Amino acid sequence: MTTLEATRQAAGAFEALPETRTTQGRPRRNGVEIEFMGLSARAAALALAGELGGRLDEEDPHAFRVVGTRLGDLKVELDLRLAHPQRRRTPPPGTPPGAGGRWLGAVLSPFVPRELITEPLPVERMAEVDALPALLNRHGAKGRGAVAFGSLGLHFNVEPADPDRVLDLLKAYLLLEPRLRDDTAAGGGFWAVRGLPPPFPAAYVGKVVAPDYRPDPDQFARDYLAANPTRLRGLDLLPFLGHRDEAGVRAALPKNEKVSPRPVLHYRVPQAHVGLPGWSLAQDWNRWVGLERLAADRPRLDALGAAWTPRP
Image (cartoon, rainbow, N blue to C red; front, side):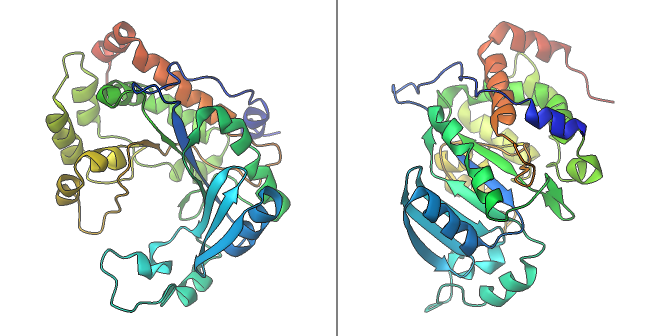
């Protein structure tokens, strides 16, 4: 048994977040993205509808919605923007769904992941989401963390309890990032390590984790965008910052950088292992819970920040 297999099979129950409700009193929500290979978007959507109920809606030949399942609305699509040309911000007039993308998607589908996307769900329902990888695997979905062109991602879109405390969550992530990356890729070999998103620049990490770094929201956004004009970070704040100021975020990014504004923190480090029997989302979720616990402990957060040194 590999280290990765032992680690995955040891995953236990989903731990509770230290703060389960938002400052408005609502239960916190999390959306999940699970990438896989070996099963077309259409076949995966049909499998989900068959086992969870719901109605299949086709957006294009490589993108489907499963509406009204027991887990709300789900999406399954080829993770390739060029396969969905109708989604361009200014598509040519009269562009039909899938125009130009059908052929490209068919050619590249052996190499490009498919992605299952849930709607934001109360975090108490994570155990139900955990059944989806096994469902897909029964119908032929595969994947072991990474492929030659990148990661097979397991992404969490976590609603923060308090948007004004996102800085503490980022500080905690930056302090834990080396360990999170090591734990995620453990036993997965070269491709698992290569598939991880690039780490945050060391100069930015040192600046942010310092105990006296407490900028106002506008300065926080400017600092982040200046150092990280990309969504390829383990904790991607572009959705969160774009929700607050979409025009300002887009102006700071390269022209073709993808931004999906929404009030969540896009946690991108974990990798999906749909092809590994018994694999669970629990361990990666529990790592996020540990991050939130650190963020909630200001004295410890400041002490670790004051002692931070760049990783050799």
